[in-house]
Amino acid sequence: MGWAFVWLAWIGCRGFDNTAPFLEVRGPVGPVKVMAEFTIKVHDAQTAVRRLMVTVDDDRSEIITLPKGASPHELGWVLGLASLSQGPHMVRFTAFDDALVANTAEAEISIDVDRIPPDLELHRPSLQVGQGRTGVVWVRAKGEPLEKAVIRFGDDREPMFEVNGAFRSLRGVPIRAEVGPLPFVITAEDQAGNASRIEGALTVVETAFEEGGFIKLTAKQKRKRKDKAALREMRRERDEAYAVRTLEQRWREPFLLPVKDGEFTSPFGKFRTYSDGRKDHHTGLDLSKEQGAPILAPAEGRVLLAKPQAIFGNVVILDHGHGVTTSYNHLASIGVDVGDVVKRGQTIATLGSTGQSTGPHLHWSMVVGDDAVDPGQWLQEDFSTAPFR
Picture 1: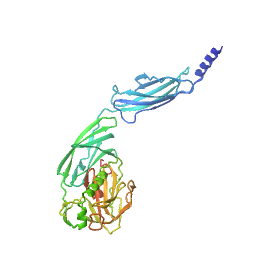
Picture 2: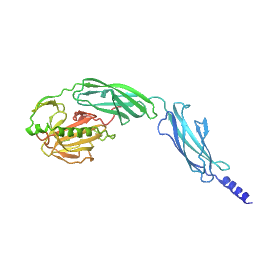
Picture 3: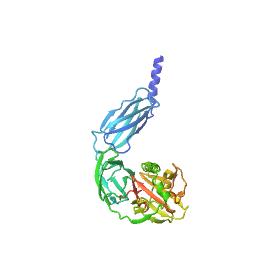
C-alpha cells in the first residue's frame, strides 16, 4: 500500500506539471573561426531536466550530456565549426523536463563564422614626416573591426593602439634621421583570429632647422656640466620616464600652449653654439614670459617626475599615454607630485630660470617613443582621432 501511494503521488506530480524548465544560454561575442563556446544554465523546479538537445540551422542535432545529480545544472559546451560555411548560423538549445507530457524551453543563439582574413587599409596621406617631428601610421580593416595590430620597423616591433575603430602607431623621428623611406610591416587580426599583413613606408623628409645663436654660460654652469655623476643620474631619471608606455590615451584634441601668450624665443631643432665649445640642436621649444608665470598642462597627463635636476633645474615630466611624454624645465617652482593626474589647462608649475638657463623661460620638450620631437607640431595637429572617412 505504501509503495503504491508513493508511485501514484510521483505520477501525479509529473502529470500535473505544466511549467517549462528554466534555460539560459550565453554564446560567443563577435565572429568565430574554429569553435564556438557556450555557457548553459538549466533547471526544473517541479520535476527534473530529462534531456538537453542542440540543433544547428534546423538540420544538425545532438544530445548534450547533463551532469549527474539534481538540477540546477551549469555547464560549458563547445561547437566545432569545421562543417559550417562562412556566415551566420542559428544554434537552438531545447530543454525537456520529466513531466508525463514534457514541457520544453528553448534558447536561440546566432553565431557568425568568419574565416576570411581582414582586408587592411593604410591611411596613405599620413605617411610623410619631417625630421624631428612625430610620424603616424594608421591602419584599419574594411568592413569589420580589428582585434589587435602590431607594427615592425626593422627589428623594432611594438603593438599599435586602437583609436575610433582604427589602429595607430606614433613614431618620433630623430632630428638627424636619414631622409628617405622607413619601411614597416603591420600584422593585424580580426575578432575571429584571422590574420593579415600589409607593408608600407613612413617617408622622412628634410626639415630646415634654424642655425645660429650663442649661449653664454657662467663659470658655475660650466663646472656643473662637468659633474658626470649628476649628469648620469639626470639622464637615468629622464630615460626611465620616457620609457613608460601607458595603454590609456589621455589626450583628446590638439595640445594647449603651456605658457599662455608666451613668446617663442628658440624653436625646436635650432643649431646653436655654447660658450663651452659644444654645438648642438635644440631639443625643445623655448617660451618666454615673466618670472613666476603659470605653466599649464597642455593635455591630461600623469606626473612621472617632479624634482630638481642637473642642467634642467626644476623639472616636471608628464605621461600622456601611448608613449607620449612632455617635460617642463628651468621652473621657478613645482606645483605637483609624482603620481598626480593633471587636467588639460591645470597649473603644474611656475616659469623660472633654474639650472642651465640664461633668463626666465620654459624649455618645453616632448618625447614620442624614444626620440625628442617638436612639441609645436602637437599644437596644430590632432593625433587623437582616426582620419579615415
